[in-house]
Length: 230
Ligand code: SF4
Image 1: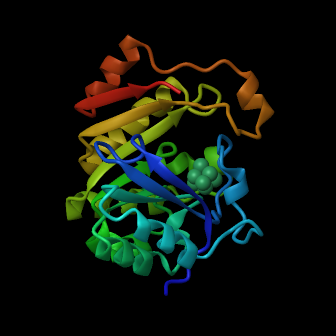
Image 2: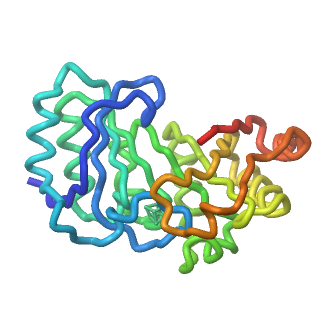
């Protein structure tokens, strides 16, 4: 049985894996501290409330034939060594496998490629500026993660959370250029969600998604740029 600390489980969602009815397994633990994180209870590696993979797997067994997919989210799922085995078990139950990641461990992501059907990849900032969002950097790891997913042809949604206090117009333009250089063809800009965010300064500040003029300039780099409201 894989060793995987599970911080929570969403039994049914239609929004976490495009076009699929899915369950979401929230993996416990993340080494980053993004200013806008709204899952702070999932950041410690251990939590009293966490359940083992055994319990989560028993639930998923009962959903065989009722769901299309299982999404591993977090926290940062790739932090945990047991993730690959858990994904293999989910495949064995007949589900598609989804992953939400910030790509901080490209060498682990590479080992997961055979199991992945879809990935939601959070791109935080221009790669040299990750520290501005998470206080610890990691942009080059994320760049490598993107490169691996594109090279493997895994269906991936690249998305960036927009908050005008963290990413200004010039930052988004620079990031668009970097993504274009990697070969990203579709990019989703999602609005900051105040729910669960512990940074009072971010919650209080007004923030907007790019206007149509900026959107046109971003689309000159990445062919499809979409906006997602909070
Ligand atoms: S990478 Fe994700 S889970 Fe980790 S701190 Fe950032 S937003 Fe939160």
